[in-house]
Image (cartoon, rainbow, N blue to C red; front, side, top):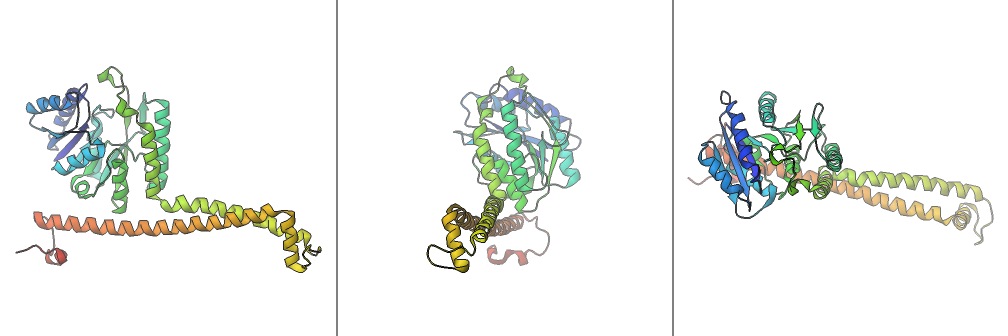
Length: 358
């Protein structure tokens, strides 16, 4: 069973065409998959919900969920995930900037690889983009490279929405993001749980033939997404955001300390204006001669130690969070399995303090 989630907000121009194309494509998979399409009308004001309901009335495999107001993408996806029943959950964009054939490739990949998440990536080897504005493309690629470096694992697209998930896995995640950053949050929490994530090369096409080539405003929110990506990369590797600047400052401190030693060596043995001799007098003379080297050394060294210490604390806090999240997710999965009767093995040893009443 495959549940295909289609979040929609003011998509009256394309919703009927999109659903028609999805139904047509999914029928080509009937020999291998059962399927449903779950449309989330996220508070649309242009008739999107009415058009989707009308379409669903004549297509038994389509159902529509509705928000009375616009709660944004994160809430829409969380709502849809909780209502799906499929062994696999696919998410597609309403304008089909990734053509429906990506669904087939992702579904085959998740079955063959045993992955928990399969991502359609235009930035993977073999992937392409068409008619994506230059600024958008540069910012998106840069943000995803930063996130990929922070997340590790060689991923090239962490912000993309078009994916296929293992259904029970994605429904077990405790997701909190409200907007498009839910896509990054899913990857972050999948990493915590050591879930396998696979990418396939994809074609991102912004031609928008179904709307006469026009691009709707919701697709132009570049700056907010970029800022969100920077924050998400911090969540993946907070240690590096503190330690790398700390190491740079430590190198500057070491360099300036070398100049302090050089100045002290130059004036060693000269009489000090304070009457001191030896090393103490040399340090006093060197300070009188070049006080800035002493100041730079002290300030950079203190800042370097503080940043490195913050990095260690951040890494420890992240580790505690990951352990707690992993434990909490495991408990929720086991509790759900106990309630549904799908848990294999000795149930009594897993109930612990959560023992159900007789």
